[in-house]
Amino acid sequence: MRGSEPDSRTSAPRSTRIHVVSDVHGNTEALARAGDGADALVCLGDLVLFLDYADHSRGIFPDLFGKENADRIVALRTARRYDEARAFGRELWAGRNRNTEILGAVRKQYAELFAAFPTPTYATYGNVDVPDLWPEYARPGTTVLDGERVEIGGRVFGFVGGGLKTPMNTPYEISDEEYAAKVEALGEVDVLCSHIPPEVPELTYDTVARRFERGSTALLEAIRTTRPRYALFGHVHQPLVRRMRIGTTECVNVGHFASTGTPWALSW
Image 1 (spheres, rainbow, N blue to C red):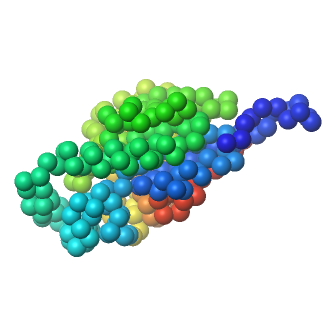
Image 2: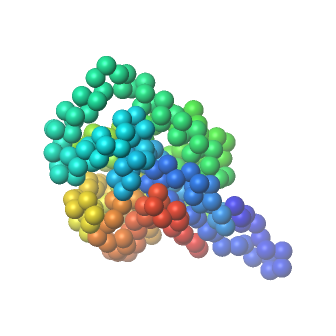
Image 3: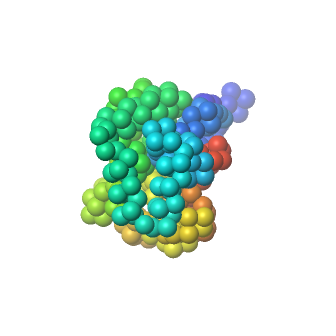
């Protein structure tokens, strides 16, 4: 990653360039290159790949149960037949230690993914991440933030990790009240970073899944009242709108990094 030291020819500081990724979902190879040419990498979570909805042969679920069963679970979830999907899952897990097997697979992915992070990286959790495991894998140079602020290149970045409660029951879903408390703890920031988007229909609707994902009203209220320069997020892989203004704030879905392999760039 390039530095931000003064240019010896002009004695003027270089501009700062930040690369931002979200929804990595196991794309270790691209993650290792994500910081190239930047002063820092910001990661907005969802490192783990449990099941690739575009390729049902990839992820923890098909590794454990095979592609045919992955096809079925995706079909049930896509049809919003969540009770049937949960019942089918219970059948598959009968007689097996779910927690041990999943955590073992997650640990394997985290070991590879955290090793790919450049220095410095500032990261927060996605809804499919397991926060309790992150301290084991975050190396020096990787700063994990959730409901916390950090200064990067003279600007204040605030981070809010995780998602809100859904029928999918992913690992890091919390109550609206707990999420709102983390947003409030940030105060005024220049760049508001979160995994999920603010609660705006154009930003929460997934055009391929044909459903609304959960956005945060607390994020939307913070944008309206504290007016950060940017609000950056991911979570919705194929949003109706990737970028829009709310008042003076530029709201940006930084993209589905697992499929694009390309970070979103912010510079000043």
